[in-house]
Amino acid sequence: MSVTPAHLRTLADRAEALSAEVRTVCDSVPEESPEHEPLTAARHAADWLARGANDLRSAATDLAKLQAQPCGLPWAVCPEHGNTLSSQAGISTCRVCRRTWNYSRPSQPCPEPVTWKVVDQAGTETRMCDGHVLGARAAVANATFVRLYDGSGAF
Ligand SMILES: [Zn+2]
Ligand SMILES: [Zn+2]
Image (cartoon, helix red, strand yellow):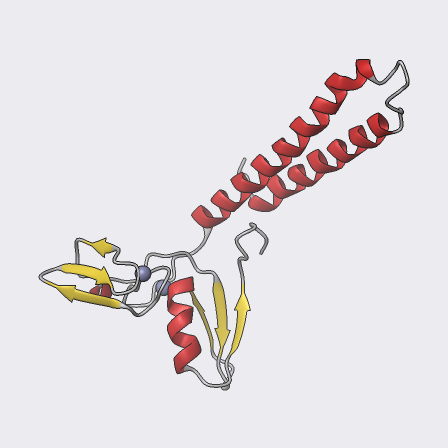
């Protein structure tokens, strides 16, 4: 059986709905009612379910990243800043964040996950990572940029 991010997100939605339902039940009892006190554990359960929903969403995000296709453009860039690498003596350094790689990163295919679909004027579609899309935005005129993956785990 293989797990998909969508399945985890469905479970997260259910946990969230359940949390909201428990809260509604608890909130229907006024604070001055004798029934308020025994519902303390139920209120904790609502919080716990809400946290569970968040954990499920973050698992979905991590899984989506893992299952994403690598970008694969023939030169790798800084994942955050794009075409900002300088290479010297086999070490690549980003000029913006100073992150280093102990190999010539621009001569390697890009290993970062695909997060964007770029369609140029001629209709040619290229899928690429966050770093590469920065350069594409500057280089490709009149292209359409579609975010495939928004960081919240939703495609
Ligand atoms: Zn950088
Ligand atoms: Zn890339």
